[in-house]
Length: 101
Image (cartoon, rainbow, N blue to C red; front, side, top):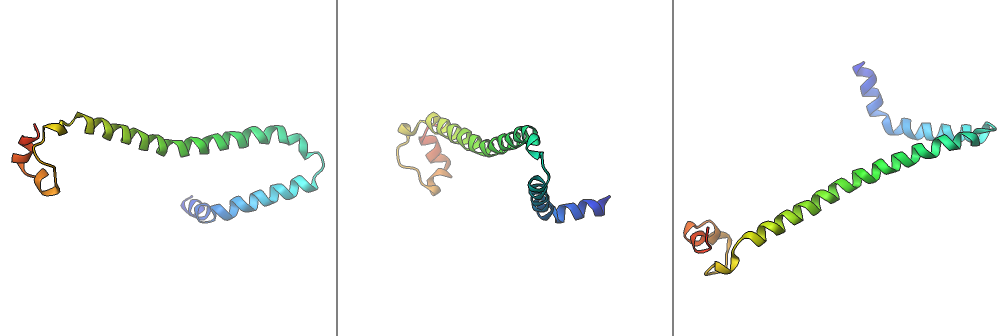
């Protein structure tokens, strides 16, 4: 079973393209295959919907993270800081106390 799985995983793209080519050849050579179009189109539409959903998930996560960071930056009382923050001064507890933390 493991060997079959490895074979299919290694040749997945080639098998996919060969299947598409074989299906196209059968559709051209066998008469009456246009009747099957009614079943193929919904399957392709479902596959396209799944791809759009998979593409939308990372975009939604990025928007969610941007909103989260924006909300956090609004919660910090920056106007109470006595001096501008730098990488070194942020680590200083005295400066953080100056900023109201």
